[in-house]
Length: 83
Image 1 (spheres, rainbow, N blue to C red):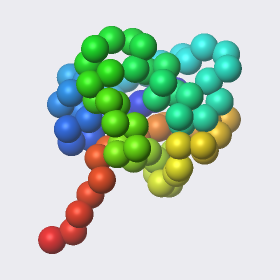
Image 2: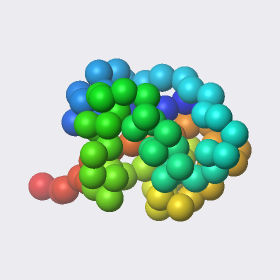
Image 3: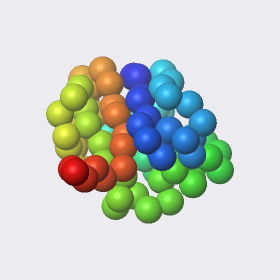
């Protein structure tokens, strides 16, 4: 699946996007984040406060418990404000 990172999430991880194949058992966005945090300190830093980072599956905002089944793209970004 394709992962896309925005704003400071991208800056902390050091890449705009990547393609990954999570292991079996990674069923939700929260599972994916926990798995990513184990990939290195840059991911740990980006997701240090999991409650702050937002996610979208195929351009639709989702909650951490959202299932990944059938997802083509997962985007991660910090909260946004208007102005």
